[in-house]
Length: 244
Ligand SMILES: Nc1ncnc2c1ncn2[C@@H]1O[C@H](COP(=O)(O)OP(=O)(O)OP(=O)(O)O)[C@@H](O)[C@H]1O
Ligand SMILES: [Mg+2]
Image (tube, rainbow, N blue to C red; front, top):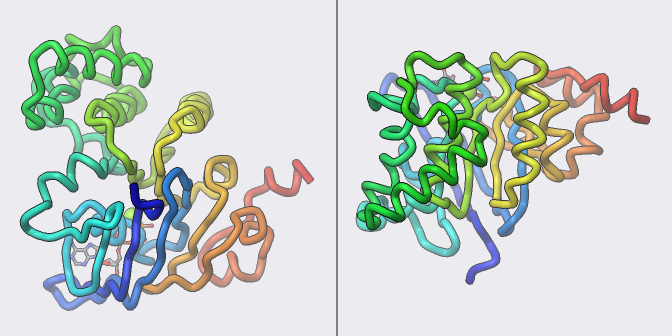
């Protein structure tokens, strides 16, 4: 198996209205790495994540375990790279929690028993099995977020992309989510303004500004660089200082 989970070369992207969101992005991520993407509003974090599972495509190349994303393999890529949106309402659209979580496995043409097994397992890992029969739209925000994770986990992806996973969670829910994410060993790419969460989960961080990667290095080192953070609309997390 290719040791590089992700390889991005010369990726640039302009939205149809002419907004240039990404410019000359190059990086690679090893299998099993946990990488944070940080940067102010509009830096290009979400746009970049959307390129990593082929939702958006442009010039430049994105390879997943050595396989370049193209029209022919996009179906297979979506199974291997799971994207968890910032807003769970963008992820959940079926009548019940079970329908949402089994949607991926059903589309993978798995046997019925395997679909049920995977869906139950994913909901159990996400702490949501007791809600299996409920309507996703009746759940609290944090519960919807957990079900969103389950919809991706049920596909057993090789790479998980998370866009602002802790946004709008209460402190307890946020703590639980961080602990939960620590237990999942899959390669993870996390875009967020929550630098303390990035510090706890990601050994490596890349800083984006105006669609360019302007720093790539050890999270611990980057997050104590007050000048770098403050000149990029960010702020060093207090916990880093408190923990010495
Ligand atoms: N659908 C769209 N059409 C046009 N421009 C867009 C669209 N989505 C994003 N953009 C623009 O692309 C740039 C990057 O946006 P993106 O959402 O990727 O930033 P971000 O780093 O995720 O920001 P945030 O921290 O606010 O989530 C911004 O200038 C934004 O205005
Ligand atoms: Mg975003």
